[in-house]
Length: 347
Image 1 (tube, rainbow, N blue to C red):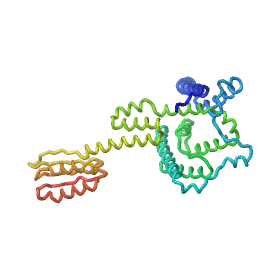
Image 2 (image 1 turned 90 degrees about the vertical axis):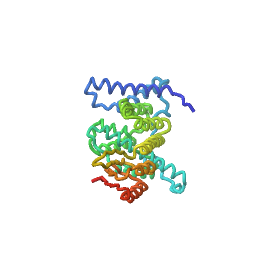
Image 3 (image 1 turned 135 degrees about the horizontal axis):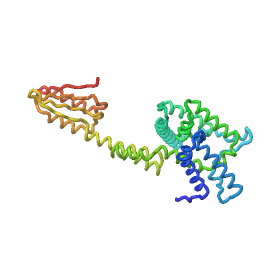
Image 4 (image 1 turned 120 degrees about the vertical axis):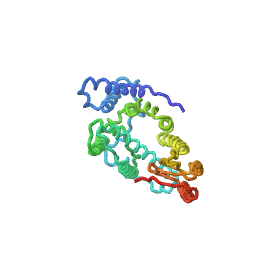
C-alpha cells in the first residue's frame, strides 16, 4: 500500500538535509571556528526550534505528534516503574518467540559486524575493533534490555561516526554517551519529544551518503563482475527487503562465483621436458572440492608413463577427501608406469 507524503515532515527533512550538506561542504571550509559545532546537534536543535515556532505561530507547517520523537513521560518514581515491563517467561516455550528471537539476534549481529568494519575504516587512527568482544557485549546488553522490557540494541554507525567526528579516543566516550542519553531521558523528555523524526532521518541519510561514496561503486566495477554483482545485489535487496535478506542474496551470488571458479580452476598445470623425461607441475588452488573430482581424475589418468610429477600444495587450504584418496591411488599405481611423484608442501 502506497503511503502519502506528509508535507511538514517532508519539508523539514529536506531543509535539514540541505543544512547538513552546506554546513559540511561550504561553511566549515570557509569558517574554521564552525568545526567545533557538531552538525547533527545543530540539526536537532534547529528542528526543535522550528517545531516550537510553527506550533505556536504557523500551524500549517507544524509537525503532528505522530512524526515526532515519542518518549514516555513520568513525574514520579512510581510512574517510571510503570514504564518498566518484565518479561512473561511462560512464552519461552513458544516456537514463534524463538523464531523472532533468533532472527533478531542474527540481524543485530550482522549489522554490528558491518558497522564494526565501516567504523574501522572511518577511524583516523585505524584501530581494529575486536568483533568477538563486541558481539559478546551486545548479547549481554540485549539480555538485560529484555529483562526490563527494552528493545534489542545493536552497534550503529551514526553513533560511531559521531564519536569519531567529536575526536573520541577511549571507551569513556561510550560511557559518556550512555550517561547523557539517560540524563536527557530523565531530565527533559518533553523537550526530546519536540524533535522531528524527519530531522533524525536527514542525519541518517547524510551519514549513509558519506559512507557509500561514488568512488566505492566505481572501484567495485573495476574489480570485475565477480566482485561487483554480489556487492550490488546485497545493496538492492537490502533497500527493498531489509539487511538480512540483502546479505543472504549477496551471499548466494558470491557462493555461485566461488563454485564456478572451483569448477574452472581447481589447479594449474605446466610441463617441460628435462633430460628426456616429461616433468609436469600441478599447482593446487586454495580449495579443491568434490566438484573437481571428475576433471582431476582425467588429469591424473592422462599423465604419460615415465613422467615426473610435481604436486605443489603450498597454496592449498582445503582439499576434499575424495581427491586425497584419488592422489593416494595414483601414487600406488605410479611405480608400474615408471612415474616419479614429488610433493611441494607448505613449510
